Image (cartoon, rainbow, N blue to C red; front, top):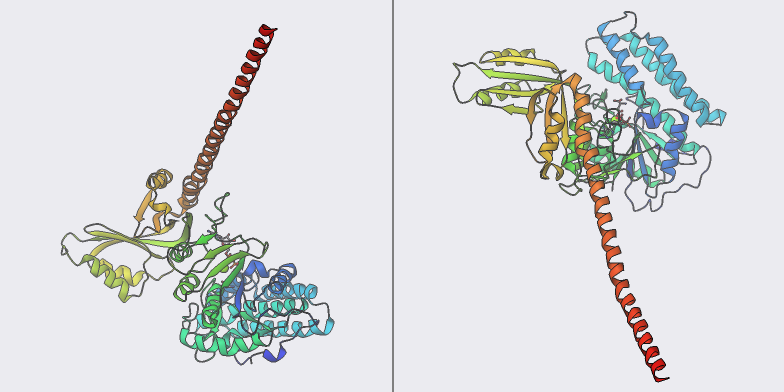
Length: 532
Ligand code: ADP
Ligand code: ASP
Ligand code: MG
């Protein structure tokens, strides 16, 4: 679908003439602004997006995700089609697509007041849904992942249409710039690897001319295309990655990730009620946090931004005036902080060497197996003759299991989660270990791993993870902050006391002087009286 779509620079226009002209567009490199699903969710949010872009001083490139929930619905449709599942409870494709279409048309109705302009966007929306219906009718054939990516792209294809409409309605010249023309990838459908070299050439040549015309290019996040022109996706949550790919290729001063929270928080707000915004995060900490479950930023995006020396800012599209979180692209630039993250969908593999095995070479054999089967490992802990490590639960582990069983006893725990404390500086503070282990005390732990001063990780039963996150946050952030506040208050009280004492001392000489004066006066009056 849509692979032959031309670049749409020629339709870069406003529906209503506006006076938006980004300052300095001839010189300044554009900032890339990426809007996530909740920031795209309906007319009001799309109008907020347009207002944010209107208020930018530098020229902008906009990257958008599908409206909230749309990618999940499409993914369920793709799964049902590939497994041939039409059991009760599995969504009916026609009903799901009709409701999805209505949601987009409802937003369009509010955003675009002018009938002809609205009809032309509605026709595009029709076309996209016709494509989806046809695709579902044809079915996945032998290439389920290829089929899934084609279908998933519908969400972002719809999103760019609405975002352009919202910008134009705000008087901003804007046009769809098809990500398939710029984000070239390999053919690993579902988790395509970008071709950085090509993107570095394609992005400036396709995007900068649009920007120089005073137009805002709006690009689908998450999708790209492979050598045959078929649509690929970068993996769930991949729009952040699109934004950093474009930002790095364009030499942008900053990429802004607009989402529904105030920035990177000290804990997942769905688990900790009192999460605090972290104003500054160093690059390594950001990668650890994103990798170990803080989904506010995609790990590939964080890694790529760092590798490209590209500052990233996370901001709240519901409160654009708030400062958000700045992720510095270099190591150790940020202030000390701590945050807790957790990741589910993890499997723990425990491997114990057979007693007859050689005393050396065991670990090399274990990791040799993992390397040959291309299974990425997250956390590792080892002892003399055994090792345990975590991998993604969705990996097909049967071949690895068999290969390891040749020389060791293997067991695989699938209902586990990792809980991670991230925070350079803080983890070095004296007493931190005690605070961490106070929180962990009540939770059975399968594995502890600390490979650097940036983070410490625990593997626990998945059901235990929320409580552990809560206790770690309480111990390391809430109580610690409380303790810091108490200390600050005590300090202030002490200073106040000192000030009062000094004031008394300063008053004292004055009093003495007055008393002296009074005594002298009294004496001289007495003398005067005696004389008389
Ligand atoms: P978007 O749709 O904008 O890409 P995501 O849902 O991918 O948004 O990421 C934002 C969400 O990440 C927040 O709503 C929040 O619930 C969740 N989240 C989890 N951990 C954190 C954290 N440490 N800091 C901020 N947000 C977090
Ligand atoms: N819409 C895609 C998803 O939900 C990409 C993204 O949101 O970043 O995974
Ligand atoms: Mg996201």
